[in-house]
Length: 107
Length: 500
Image (cartoon, rainbow over the protein chains, first blue to last red):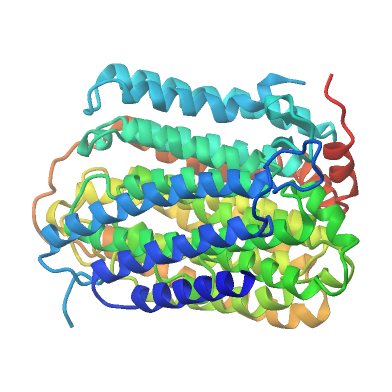
């Protein structure tokens, strides 16, 4: 499971980085989104990957660390808001600058 | 537990939320409310300084959860100082903004308050993830503030700024996640304690996380390869916003100082001294290139943006010397440069208003309406920021130069002195263009707004006050630097306190 998880993270991050380096705002926003997905999964994995265990310390000795899940929740909310903001900003840039290049002008 | 400690965060946060309830336009009620909340931060920060000055650490456990488990706010001399710098700067920017700039867009006051809440929170928090959250609060407020007033230039500069900072936030989270995965805590004091006992196998990973954090903070502080977003963004922003942003780069400097003295400080074993070897050459290069940029600037506000860069270069160069005296000297310079660059941003807008269509472009324009007053203010600010005696810039630079010892001093002295020379040339060229090379046309007859002048003079007067109170101030800063260099007391205060 760890290997699959790590490969997923790697693929998400590389695709995200590639898209971020493109010249148009839409691929860049998609790239940012992919990177935030990768980051959220990474944060989640930092509590170690355990299946079928509760997130509280009970009579069982097995438990999942709840803290990374709380962190991921915060990170999801923030990245969601930021993505919404950057989408609106790109549309504003498109209408004001007349094109969707990140520099505001086609070279 | 003293609840006043959480007030610098809650006061602007609640004021901002309250202001959102009303219509989007800036009305006089909103102005009074927002200004009152901002000015209230002044006595509050004075109280924080007085408490921190006694040398004790004040901690505040949010929700009464004890330290390594819950989030704590920690007040030490450094964080009290930063809150005070922000309060003064924000008051001046607010006084300037309520004279009309706040009506150029929507919800200016609410955003302004959220920005202050984010800044104060980031300065006061003792938890790494909480630092990330406050970073995001101040960033999202700054995105919207940067776009305040609209316009093509702002939108395109804003896009770069937002995208870069979003990537920065992702890297911040990766670093935080790595640290948590390896050390099992996010409280900065607890992290510092665990890093000293770290398993040597994990050390390279922790160093990688530390490097990522440095990258993120360097992006906020605008260090050399990461500063290209700054001049356009700052030159494009509305004047009070640009003035408030003068403390944003210092936020990055503060985070570097906090994390690399506490987490990777002198007691961190093999992970100590992670940042200085990387920072030192980049900071010197920023210092040099910033002054080149200042010489090449085509606009007054762009020139001031490069002055911000120069100050960041100097501050980080001074910090990477890693000595107690140099940290104290840098803190002195930090107060000076934040206030004066903030004042210069406001002043350049004041000048642009007088020059009609010429705006802040550095070309011959119409003569000014109140040349003596405005040129006097500009001269004062220029002398102060270039580092000529008798103002605070001179004192700050001398303190930093004096704290450098030989192998480093060989690099710092020439670079700093040459960049100061570059600044003197750039500023005198700008000043003579604006005030003397005027076209032979009628002045624009726009009255100089008294309150706006007051806001500029308020910030500029800081330069004189810093010199007058230099002795008690440097004593405070020396003690602050000693606190930073021996993080043991900080760690004990945060972790061993049992809430009453």
